[in-house]
Length: 445
Image 1 (cartoon, helix red, strand yellow):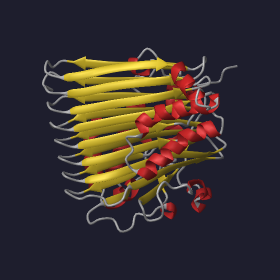
Image 2 (cartoon, helix red, strand yellow):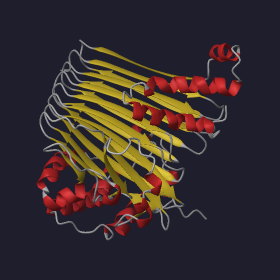
Image 3 (cartoon, one colour):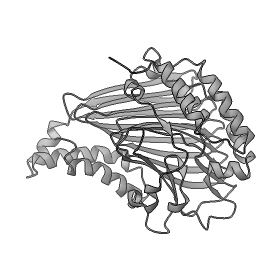
Image 4 (cartoon, helix red, strand yellow):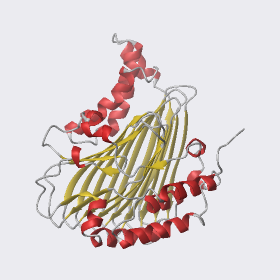
């Protein structure tokens, strides 16, 4: 007998069973916004394949499990055994670790920050100066029309907080590790993060998502990023979780005049992972550069959804995503650029290219370009193909065996995205992630 709950019952169970586990906050704003979100969930339309945004997404595997919020991080992670492979050497970065969605000070090091810079835990900020968080998050509440967004808002208790004041450059990268450990029960992780760079501020943010344990878990995270005039953020996200993970990340990016955002998203892990990036320009002459690389294999599904809104003139965006699909893996790419009527002089380009290494793999790609202005420079395109036999012949003719030759072609394909990582330590780490798939014979060539 099929005991899987209906989607409506699944969401009701998530709220009812976890609400008591999320402790009451000293912040009246947080308690109020949780209550509002819980009420909203019961009246919202749930995602299904009839909706365009969820057309290629099968949530059936997610609904098979009931996930539970853990009030505190597990002590097993305190020894640092699962996060010993830092990207940066000692003292080369500011480090934060979130274990099961909670800030873990035992593994973090955020001392000696530049004057005025605040980096830490949303939970701690809400306990000391709640207005600095609530006033920013409140501006976004009415935009959260998705039920997973509301689920996050209903049950969130912690997350990353970064605030860089005007004309301040953070002297070291900010390295954040989200360590998810699920042993006794299926785990629910619900971080909600806030990143604010004031006018002229600069920072580099590196985020890693890793997992451990014997049980399934659901990571349902939201990150809101605000870049004010002439601010600049380099943002790298590395999703390398276990095959027991279901990962959903939402990034809401708002860019003001002449701000610059450079993002690189790399996804190699998880049973199912989806990343939604919503970018909106709030002032002219802003630049948004989005790059992505995903590898997806047996029993894996990886989704990327981009929604870039050009609603002011003289802004540019670049979206360049590449995928390597092997085994019976499935990749989904849904990229949309909307150019409003008044967004003249827009320069926008969208590209998605996929390398299909097996007969059983699947790629669903849908680039979209909607233009309502008449003085723009825009393009979009997508490809799905196999390894070029001419390239393979060229390498084989020089004495390289077939496995190594195919490996070199795949790594060269990936390097076209990895080259956007101008930090050597991050580049080498990300390159190693992809290379390890071949070394472990995860990808059968």
